[in-house]
Length: 432
Image (cartoon, rainbow, N blue to C red):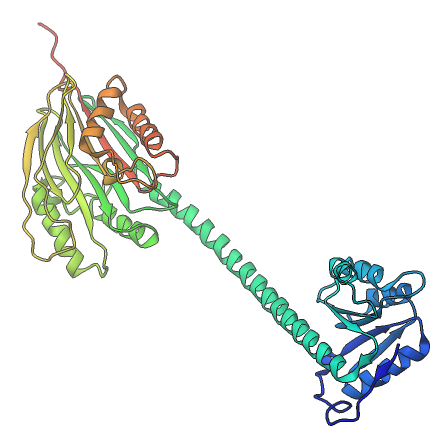
């Protein structure tokens, strides 16, 4: 190996390299050639280690993380390309830039060197200026690789921290889902004259839907279905607040009931209750959310229903003969505009009829993630007719199954909730 060391400015002094990126391994079976090359590298500011064979160099590389390797191509035993291939197989944290020193210029030989992992070539005789330029280029690549590795390490640490936080949030959300589901006191209730079934299925851990009922006085019960705008934690928190306003366990907290004397309570009309909820949204609840609601008072003796529908889907009644009717003209959602007056409407359930209050997660369920076709009212009417022979929770579960089949996945895009009241009518007294 012949090395031409120029005396021009910068050939021996040059730009000093940072100590952390200046570890060079020189591999050559000629001791004299190693010394000549090492002297030139040391003048450039590199820290140099020498090895007289590929085997010796490989042992050194197992113990030291050299950044730059200069290896002669032709050596007895393990030649330069074989050493390069085995060097690439080492388990190293950082990248090592490998330069082969060769007198070969044939394309096939150059291709062989690249195939085994060489990064660059320097032909003999070696010129010091060219050598410094090649090493500087290699040094930049090694520096970029180290920066990338450090960033990846930092990203890995950040990801682990995020994963830990996500796991904690996921556990909290799972507990939140259990608590939200516990807001529904009874999934099924037999009132004698009617059966009540409730469905609440969130699209995520927690959702913005809420269904329930509360006792009033005499033969009346209250039913409600609520859908808070948005999804997730804030929507779920608002449903919990609303559940308190329509409490089934504490009549004094239920805004639909007003104590008169003793244990007697006056029942407010549904439109008055919804108006009070709307006022509370602007007076006491600081949120940008709003919600839709169907609130009904049902007399279990007579089948008379009084209801207010505020932005919620039209309630459905399936008559005993299978016909499906939708009621209500709609009204503004609660929490959008202050001071709104809401209307009430009524109808009558006859024995064998069933009333369904439901969220738009049913009628607006799409026929797949990439389509605008939805179930809509006509589709719901068909589903009720198809499942006409089912009752109670079995009917609600069948509706969910039909929705997942229609959407093409069990992960429905929106919360699904429903209140099902199946009216039997008062029992007929036996003849004298």
